[in-house]
Length: 90
Image (cartoon, rainbow, N blue to C red; front, side, top):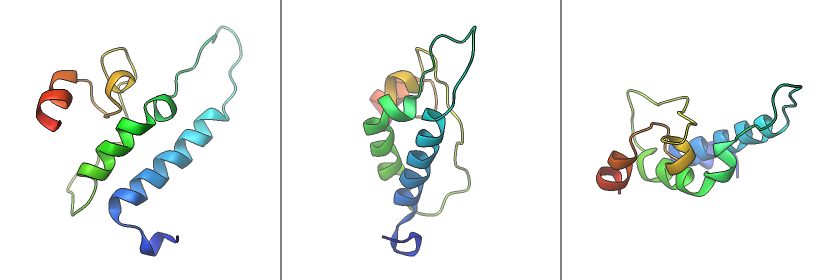
């Protein structure tokens, strides 16, 4: 499938998969002992978020995330309000 045949949400999914693979290839030296990649372990909810809200014309797209224990690390959505993700976005 080429980029011309993808809708916006699928283009975002493809971009995050590419970014995740690039992040997985990074190597760090001491004192870094552990590296989290929420685009890998939270892939399923993140892609569901992109597919649900990523289509159509947008004025803004969030590029970045809160990878801490109260952000994308838990929800796969690139902001840290778990209650809003769970209760408002569904």
